[in-house]
View 1: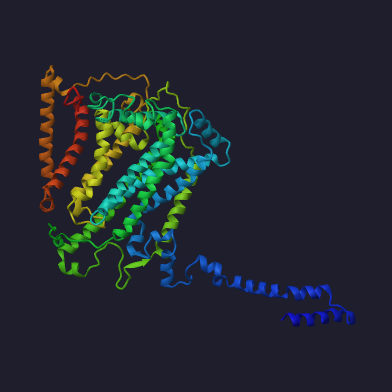
View 2: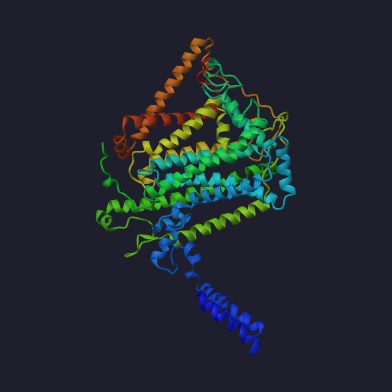
Length: 307
Length: 311
């Protein structure tokens, strides 16, 4: 190999002396030709993009409308795989589910996104907090819209969660085998209220301050654990060691209460809620997907209970 | 009529969700019950005609021979979900552009808001505060509500109505739940929002919220009505009244549980624990409307007074 190269080299040296050298452009063309060819290959590949490695690595199946692909579209997608591949044909109607559970999830997502944006502009500090809200509302571009959306979505979520519970009750969907998921749902309902309640204090305005004062004053009266509750004083509970003190980080609604509400609101409750949401959705699937509309059962078909 | 006052209440930013509820809840009650009654007509038809019951598809949904029972989620469910999220997003956007979220003056512990109200979804509990001491209204009642809701699947031994709207097959369960949800929860929220004014006094819709209004209500305890003045007897009389309530309402609740032939069938399926849990929850629940009636009609403050707690 080495010898051959040595033989060829002098030839190349000789030719230019006799004939005219190929033009620079020609030489460039020759040199670049392989790149052009490869480029064309790539261009053709892009025109047929579904066969590229990149495409195939992202999408795990073809897109032509076959039943198999429709199933795979749901099953291979992390967001969609909450769903089964197929559902009861009557369950996709609005009138059975009212869509309230799904909308609660959607509003929770909206609240998380708007909430994260709000956190960029907010200090959970007495005095600063209210100024931050004023600044956000009046000076930050779209700040008012952001805050309004967060607040209204929160209210809307309370309503959708209530209506979700009402629908699940009316359709008897809590009955076997979904008893446990109803329990998880009730806890989610309570957490939704608490999430909204802790958010109430954060603007640090009169509305939030007095709402939280009224709300936490009830904790004074907790039996055994509140300093005004039955048997509380007998157990040595005072305003400085009762359950209200633990909630507020003090005996009055002040800077510690603001910080605690902030941490519960932005970190602790959303985390707990997310975990329980995962359980809730998991159990919807594991308990046999959505409950109906299922065929009616007649009184004469009631089986004797297993003892 | 003070229309302006009414407008001030209805248009307060924090009350807007409740105005929405005033329309949304009746709509969905109607929407759900309409399907319940449609199913009930089908059930009646199938019960009259056992032959039909054997071959019928047993749903009120449209049905045709040969239709697949299931459809693909992609696209039949996902398109509905996409549409729903888009609609809600548009509603939320328009709502957020047109109406500002509530923001009052900076918090000032020295300036009490009058009326100072809890967030609207807790107003039912705040309304209960009028009738019960805080440890009942603020702690015991919420606990019972949560525990009671969780207990529902475990004390409802009726196997019918699983996965479809029906009223006929679940009258007791549905009436009880609707009473709790619509009357004891939502109606009290509405009262707390629209009726309760300064000093948590009762103002009819259209009445001006007079911050200087004085009401001389003399609420009396039950034992005072009987003229009993010294302690061991006060407690004893209260205990007897409370015990009488538990016995009478426990009995009435039992009558309700075994009201019809069908109810007795369901009752026969209950264990003692299930029955006692149901009794406890229901007797606690009846206490609220009863106490409201006692207060509004007879101005009774407490029925049972002890040195430690009063009911």
